[in-house]
Image 1: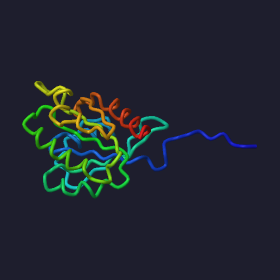
Image 2: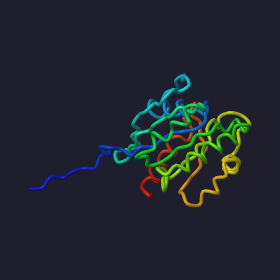
Image 3: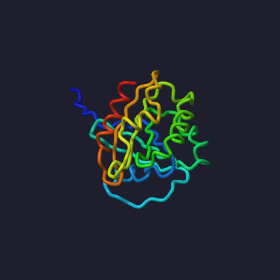
Image 4: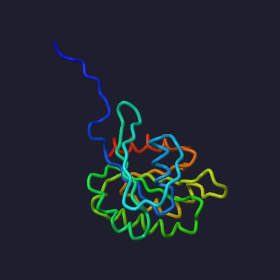
Length: 177
C-alpha cells in the first residue's frame, strides 16, 4: 500500500536577495517579516539572512545585503542561485532616486540576474510626502526593463503594511520565471 504524502515548504527554499541603498529600510523590513515585531536596526555590514514561510507550500530564503556604497561592490557575490531580486527604495527621499536608479541599473546588468524577476518595494509609505509607486517607477526607469518580469509595490517596514502581499507576489514571480 502506498503512502499519502502532503506537500510542505521546499527543503531548499528559493533564494531571494534584498538590496537597496543604505537607510532604505531593508533590515527593518526583514525583521518585521520574520518576527512580526519592530526592532531598531543598525546599518548592515555584510548581510542578514532568514527564511520566510508564507504558507505550507511557499517559503524563501531572504538575503538582506548592506547598502552602503562600499558594500554595493560586493552584491554580485550573493547573486548565484538568486531566484528573485527585491530592490528596496526609500520613497520618502526623492533626492536619492538618481543614486538608486544607477545602483539598480548596475546590478541588473550582472549576468547572474538574466531572467531573474524584480520586485521594487517603495518603502516608508507611512511617512508624509512619499512618492507614489508611479513616481518611483518613473524615477527608476522601470519601463526600460522590457526583458524582465517586474512589479512595484508600496510598503512600510516599520508598520508591516504591504509586506505579506509583496512577498506573495515575489513567490508568484518566481513560479512564473
